[in-house]
Image (cartoon, rainbow, N blue to C red; front, side, top):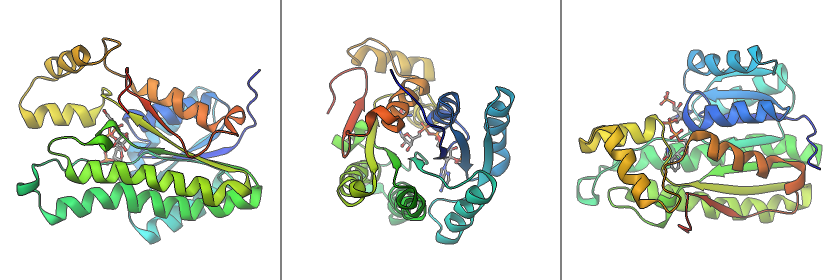
Length: 253
Ligand code: NAP
């Protein structure tokens, strides 16, 4: 039987897409959830939806790539919800381009949000996990970690997330903390919608093509990823650490 002890969870990039579905899923699992995103008013929509379903949530506006912003956000979570012991590093951006056209700014922006962001958030939250002697970190990687045309920056960041995850598992395991990564395939969100727009393909056609390329014959929904994150955050997953789970409708990875 799966048992859930209520915890305080932080989900970055929680205002929409995979982050929003994950925030709602963790709230359904019984956790209090800090929905953290760049704009507090956007995070507030999800926090209000969780509250109206009977859950506990807090909307927090913060930039995960900024040291002071992260410190202030985590302090607010501690004050208003309690010490966080679950962290989902989900915030992400794309700045796709072929290597010869990719600007240093687009490289830095992508590595800044995904890698520096996950580093800063985890560094700030781990102190509370260590104090509690229990913690769960889940990082969002991607099938793009295996290489993807036009995504040198994003692929490097998402492969970096895997090395970061494994190192967290090694360093933090002795404190009762696990760290795992979920690597989604094609998930229907604003992010894939923006990619379709950039390449000039109607989103429905883009989805249909991706579904054809996927062994289970469909594309993913944010809830498919939230379910995997929920497992890694559960009590039952306490002996699973440093793993990368490809959730991609097939064996990619
Ligand atoms: P999304 O719809 O674009 O949502 C990402 C969220 O992150 C947005 O709400 C965004 O805020 C927020 N964010 C961006 N920069 C931030 C920052 N510096 N600080 C705080 N929040 C920030 O993306 P998604 O598709 O749900 O993806 C979520 C995660 O899964 C990402 O890490 C992505 O790389 C990964 N992933 C997605 C797919 C996919 O197919 N969708 C596949 C593999 C991996 P704004 O709206 O204000 O920009």
